[in-house]
Image 1 (cartoon, rainbow, N blue to C red):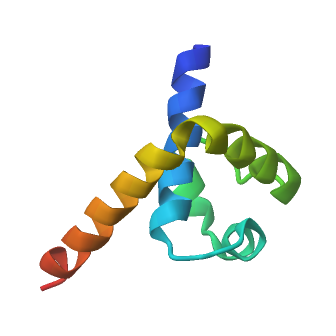
Image 2 (image 1 turned 90 degrees about the vertical axis):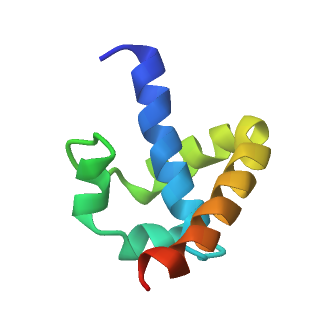
Length: 82
């Protein structure tokens, strides 16, 4: 898997964090299901420290994108669930 693919997969996890409504990474990481990580292309759930580092790396370049994605997904949620 190329570097660009890895960035996209971490980006999916970042979107999952943003739309989760958690404020802090630690409780979100602790509560996140292994199936979420597998769906996003990870072989296993990484350590909290690794997760924190990767999400912080993305924060500088992805805040606006993630905020917009979060708003769109939260807005769509009620329509999906009826």
